[in-house]
Amino acid sequence: MTIDTQTLSRTLADKAGARLEMWLSICSRCGMCAEGCHYYASNPRPEHVPAFRVKPLVDLYKKRGQVDATVLETLRDVCYGTCTMCQRCTMYCPHGIGIAALVHAARGVAVAMGLTPPGLAKGLENALEFGNNLGVTEDDFLETVEWQLEELQEEMPFARAPMDKEGAEFLLTFHPRDIKFYPQNLFNYLKLYNAAGIDFTMSSKAWDSTNLGLFAGDVAKASRLAANVADTAERLKVKALITAE
Amino acid sequence: MKALGFEAPYWLGRKFSFEAMPPIKVWADCLHAGTLKLKPGFHAAPVTFQDSCNFVRNAGMYQQSRDLMSVVATDFREMHPHGNATYCCGNGGGQGLMPEYKQAKIAALKAKADCILATGAKTVVVACHNCEDGIHETCKNYELDAKVELFSAYLAEAVDLQGN
Amino acid sequence: MIHVVYNFAVGPMVWLAFTICITGLAYRLIRYRRKAVAAKKGLPGDFRTTWAVRSMLYYLLPLNRTAKSSPWSTVAGFALHIPLLVVAFFLSAHVIMLEQSWGVAWPTIPDVWADVLTIIALAALGFLALKRLLHPALRGLTEPKDLLVLLLVALPLLTGLAAHRQWGDYPLMLTLHVLSANILLMLIPFTKLSHMALFFVSRAATGSDFGKRQVGAW
Image 1 (tube, rainbow over the protein chains, first blue to last red):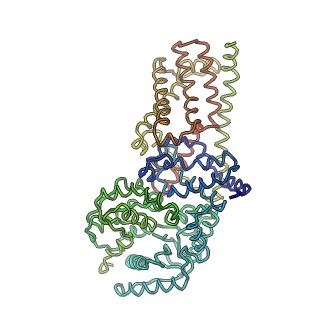
Image 2 (cartoon, helix red, strand yellow):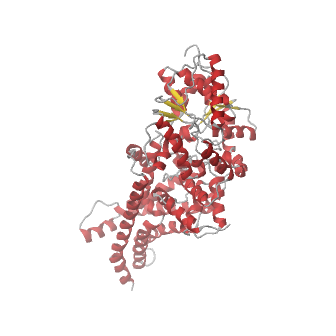
Image 3 (cartoon, each protein chain N blue to C red):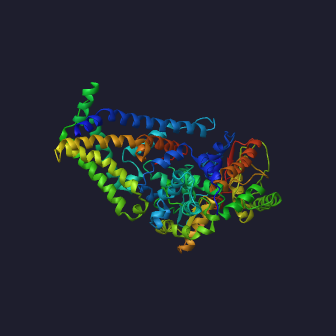
């Protein structure tokens, strides 16, 4: 693999925000974050100490991006392969370093260098094309809602599932698999919200509030996904958006 | 939740006219307002709750989740650690979509498996789809005799249709 | 010869050391502020001051998860920082020097206390160094500079104690003490010792962030 050093140094400069610079420079590698990590708790090895995940990034900045491909591959494997960005370690860091945010930035570097893990890349592609990461079409979505509403009406005759209703108080959103694989989940949501009697609506266009761009560390794509849902919520003038469970 | 609730305004450089809300908050608010009626003690089997990083550690839904659980479950058992300090389900940050790192993920689930086992719970209620997979894999790989149920399903079963 | 070095070390070099330390840290704080403002993209501020202050207090006092999960390292941390600051600011020799040049003074601690505190701090440094070398996971994380920085902090303590106790050659020890302390001051802004100022910034940022969700970051 040849490295596009220009892209790399531009990305490093972009990512060098206030907190990143500060955190990279004050992490003392004291190792107390180890207690916070389930990777470490399950398998106490040096590479499972959260502070270790910061190392490839520190390396990149120190060498100003003048590195070979193995460094980037290590960065990818460390940042995607040994972290769930759960932020538990931050609660154990005496300095309060947001290690998840640093891992996120490192993932962003991997993305810019074309190293996004294929599974995430595929989901992202779907999300951008269909508005949801499993590639459910609008017709399928509407049909599934109708089907689950009918089922629900058998036990709750008054149940409703308003679609694209302006001015509702809440906008319901889902995880795409609630629609594609587990429509029972959709049934449960409709049951709870109908039982509670809240004024809600759904959107036929933007109903997936998950964001694979966030996981991948791809801020540009994450922003587009978030904007899709946010614009819809604002157009429907809802007071609150209920995120996927 | 993390994307729309916390990060997106800074990505996009604008404040939204709406608020992003975790489902747990809506359910708990409706419960407290008395509009959502749940059958008290509907679930008798020993149960524990996986605190999701996004809804509990990052969105502060600890108390709300316990308020809901305490109504519908008669034998609720906490994991140790739990709440804001709970161990991750192991499936966050896109781990579910990266089969190349699956072995490391499963090895890291041991911590969670020990926590669940110690509670003796037969059901683990999860409030997040990533957790659902993570805990499911935990139970499968560490041979725990517990089923995984989404919070929404757990609550929906207990909805009191007569009362609502 | 040693007197020439000593006079330089307690004269111009002290000025240089403090200037570098203070302007260096100030530069880092200003740079942080500038970048943080840019990242906000003009959105209304939502900094949670109460949560930020609590976040600092919970770690300035041993009232946090880390104190429970890593009790020995926490003890070592306090045993290093408290003596370091108390001796630096309240040792009679330090205060007298300040009084001679600037005419300001404040109460001091008995010299015996200073000796004991210094030994405690050195023991803490020894513990931290040994933990780095012996703890299997931490050893894998340690880089040579992590040990060097401990040495950097240990040197002024060690030479200061030696000078006061009249171990070895007094003028030499005193000169080494002032030199090593100056070097330590000058390196603060450029090493992880910058946590001297940035600890508060980092804890405030994280405390406020967690506080927005009503979760304590401790």
